[in-house]
Length: 341
Image (tube, rainbow, N blue to C red; front, side, top):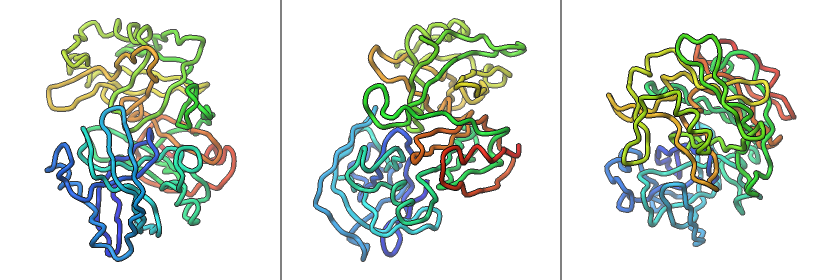
């Protein structure tokens, strides 16, 4: 996602992360794990902004992979032409296993931050009707990913959006995008119905996290999925390779949330980091670790995140154009808009 920071604006590209809650950027690329990638994504130099304020307050964030430390600054941040003066964010001084900045869009003030994060600020400044945004990642092979702050794109899904309550707080006491997954299945190529696996106690609490590439489920459930992919072979990294022929087959992995079933095509569920390399989109979560539905799930879903009403809306992702609609405040408001695909 593109952010313009400072006066005059400095363009920085940051990773969108629904699993974290803070925006931070690099001021130089020396600390990045890949200075060349960092340089391509852009940096923010506070000394070149007339509206920059150094708060002299330190920050530190640890991710599933990587960490960053630095200083909080306050400056103007613009997203899609919408200017947000006096926005607080981090400027990195040291980092590990990271190569570009991150925009966390999970719950901010007062649950996870002592200041307004980007979603809070959009609402506080009157730019959105509520703390709501929608995300359609779309295909991994085309640059069609889209985030809409304060609204939805009715040409990115079919049918109606199903409302799913956010577990608030989650089972671990954290304030994140926790929801209950009620079923998991696999509709194999040519099959007329899904082979539904048993989910413990009829529901599994999971986090929706766009900052995680794969999806992580408990070992017992993973073993059931693995049995449907007999050619899968575990690599030294732990990931499971599969024949790339799966990508062109018509099967789907089926995720059930109440009455809504999200059918993720094999073409999106199979992770393809490079041509000729294909991997199962699931990995087993270690005992005690948090189950996560990452990009291998999200590429098949259109997701509306409504912090104000602690709700998620889900529909099957389809891209048939673009038609943006502002969502009014209120419980269930997004359910009124039928997808045009």
